[in-house]
Image 1: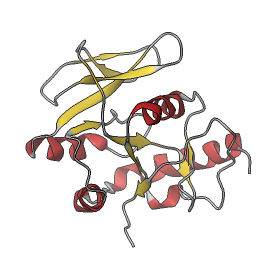
Image 2: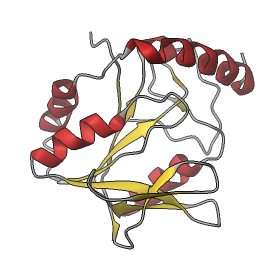
Image 3: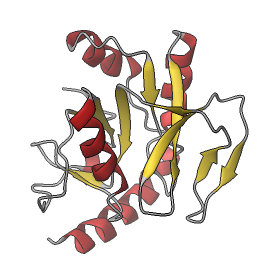
Length: 179
């Protein structure tokens, strides 16, 4: 299947399963950070959109443990940066209909929770096609180590994600079923 066909199929399934309240095991994500000896206390997350895994619950748990939380803001030149945010803070809606922080304080996460449409066993990710996360991860990896963890439902796994030279592989995928 090509990227368009995979997106169409997964969007349909994701919408059907969304009401089942499937959750990602927070302890699994925390173990990943311990295993990597990740010292960063800044986590980049995302506000769930279009039936994505709810990262907010995970971010709230990290905040209770003293981590600094951030969410992305899309910039005009197809780039994005992450800005300080707390669940108590207001959000504004961007041109894509996605909530963004109102803060102007840019932060540089050492841990990035990444939304995705589909993934494969090699940790390749298929997103929405805008390349925002691929560009951001590539830029951050040039300057500093960043641990990337894709959040997905187990049914979003496909045999093979078609990739190109711009696609950035994730370090981990956390799903509602950990093996």
